[in-house]
Image 1 (spheres, rainbow, N blue to C red):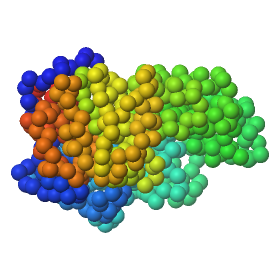
Image 2 (cartoon, one colour; image 1 turned 30 degrees about the horizontal axis):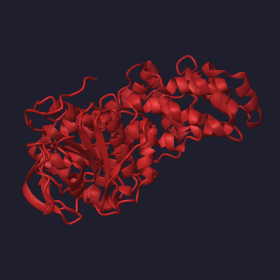
Image 3 (tube, rainbow, N blue to C red; image 1 turned 90 degrees about the vertical axis):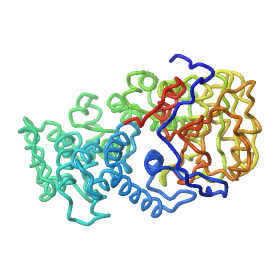
Image 4 (tube, rainbow, N blue to C red; image 1 turned 30 degrees about the vertical axis):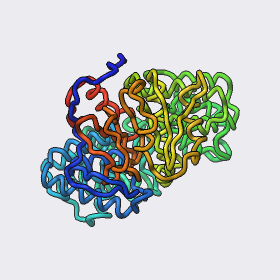
Length: 514
């Protein structure tokens, strides 16, 4: 990627805007109320159906639903475009399903296509029905029924049935078929639908091996007595496992005693990059062979494989922080670089990382990853891809981070993570900008934060020509105005959030990316 000019000669406009209303941030600073579309976009791009530092899960969900209805009433095209962008580009599942369902509930036109657009995985038609019933009752609007039916016809196949139709699920694939009546695409899918219904209601489903060979082979393997399965695994190769749609999760449940080195080595060739990086510790603990290690290393550093996996940079950090082997950590450095090709090279930049208390909450209840770790990853990548860059962390006070010469991007994240607590837990980000922005060295600030400043309005930062605020939480009050005059807000956890920055740095006005 070519490097941008060091100075922006035109101050372009951006779609994420604040209105004229004033409010206080959650930390008590002077804030700016966002426009409705902006508030919905920022919240959706950072949405996790979990309690956050400043909002309960219920309050956050209610605010999100209310926003969808209000924007649908005034600008339905915006919501209809945001839904598929959210799911396909930002890879956010729960918020996109909620948004599509509430768009229909609010009376948005073309709801069938919007619902269908957010269903991208075999379990999501059932998830859409589950959300609708939990919020609106069992009677589904026709747009939801037809959109779910379209999604089921597109997504249901032998492999998805094996992966997503477990008996523990509250809504099974057969329930989706009975509630929405999808039209089978062909005779093979018609046979699959019948198998799913039989499997759900009678548990006597029989798959014709000439029509549904994967299901038939999976049934044959499932019928092997437990004490013979190790021997059967020895005889089976990756091709035979693939014929039965055997994922590592299915293999772990099928094999008595769980996964050993031989089991991992048998399934590694069929695992995706995401599954590989999540299991690096397991590979080491079970002692997979050097040949298997090299296979994994080659896969997770292959540009095409990594592009196909569409990893978030912070997911690579999660694997890095859990990987016990330096060999894995070196490879993951390459993986991270491959996930961040859309991040621009910015000369003369001050990068600011919010390490306050509210940023140390996890991004999801089942995750150990905190917002500050996400911020550190994105900031370290931004700094690594730029020259003449300074990095500062801030809380109640602030501190310039002096990275070791030649340190990798991932080791820089580790250095920032080790400094948590060094600057206190309040949020004085504007003070940090004032203290460290030097017009002789810097042309812009890129700040990673939940944007709830205690010092907003109390510190003069008008001398800074350009500030990009990467919002990682989506709270309502904003600490700075946004949308023009060098004040821009980005949102989300992926490198896709930087597309807007590229446009603005080129001196062009930016519109919504959908």
